[in-house]
Every structure is written in C-alpha cells, then in structure tokens.
Image 1 (cartoon, rainbow, N blue to C red):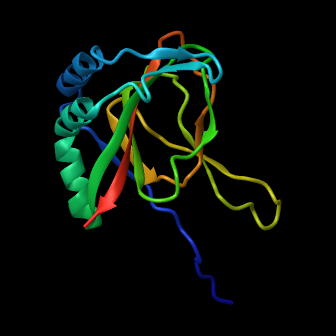
Image 2: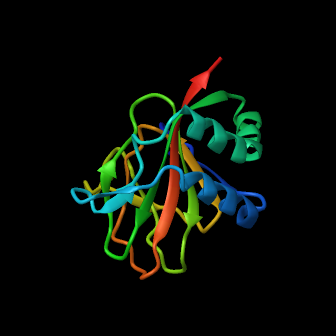
Length: 175
C-alpha cells in the first residue's frame, strides 16, 4: 500500500525582527485610525476606515519580513488592505475568510500570555469521523502568519483581562 498526499495548504510564519521598537511605530500609526466597536461580532476594528497612506506606511514598517517572504516563496505581492482588531476579554471573531485569490497576513501586535490563538478550519471533513478539524496557530507576540485568503479561520473568546491586538492585511499576487 502506498500513501500519497492529494492536497496541502501552505502557511508561513515568521517572527518580526526588532518587534518591540517596530510595535511602537505601528501603534503610533494606528493612533491616526481609531478602532470602532463592532457589537455584532464582539470586537473593535478600524476595517474600512484606513486609507492608502496607512497601507503604505504599514507596508514600510513590515518591509523586511515581506521581502523575505517574497524571496522564499518566489512570488511578488501587493498589500491591498490593512486593519487592526482588538479583542477584550470575551470578545471573539466568527469563522470567516478573506476571499478566493491571494494571501492574508496577521501580525500579533499585543498578545498577552494566555490569549486565544487563531484557529484555521480544514476545508474538508475527516474521511473516517466526518468531523471538521480546527488547527490553532502557535503564535506569540511579534509573530506574523500568512495563509491563502480562502482558508477560513476564527478567534475564540479572548481569555485574558488584557486585550489582544492584531493587525491583519490582504495581499494580491502580482507579476
């Protein structure tokens, strides 16, 4: 009997270099784009409130990691949207994805010990148990995780009294 893998979904992770210093620069940039509370989904975000200047400035702040990613994957990317999300104790984000084409990234800006990880949803059920697999990231503060946009994911309720804050962004593949 021979076993093969028909499908796999790649996920890339990288620790942000000099996170403490760059985190302060990112937070200063975020001060210009305050988050609003989303009661429907139980978190705060500035999605849809940022402009091209924010995207450009954020791109510069994470340029070393983006360049390394492009070199490693041999693809060129363009950031098309960026936003922040803050989760207070009990806040969560339901299952969602970011579209069909391209990539999405998460930077764990503030990630207090005990914070809820992001879980990714396997897009097919287990062939024996007919159950869905939920795979958590093993991320910490300063980590960047990049996945294809189509991979559904969610954040369970934040466990700690200290807020968790992430920056997320979408990327197109360009030639």
